Image (tube, rainbow, N blue to C red; front, side, top):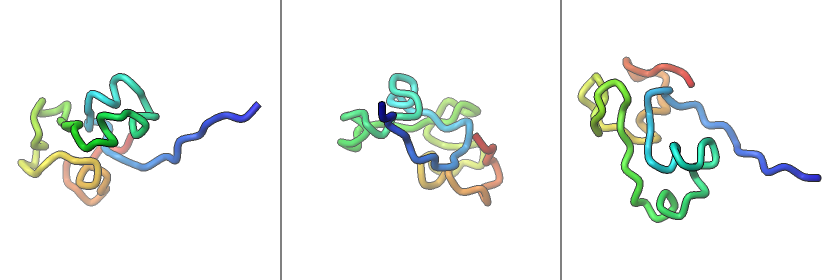
Length: 72
C-alpha cells in the first residue's frame, strides 16, 4: 500500500488560509488554492498583514528571517 506524502515546507505556525483548514497539510491539492484564489491571514492579527505590517503569503511567511516568524 502506498501513501501519499506531502513535502514539508517550513512556514510560520500563524499562517492560515481556508485550504489549510479544510485540507490540512495537503492544502496545496485544493482546487481553490491551485487557482490562486486562496487568501492567507495571520492568526496574530486576523488580517492579511502580519504583526510587522508586512504582507501575509506562503513565501513571505516561510522566511525564518522574518521577525514575527514562529516555526511550525
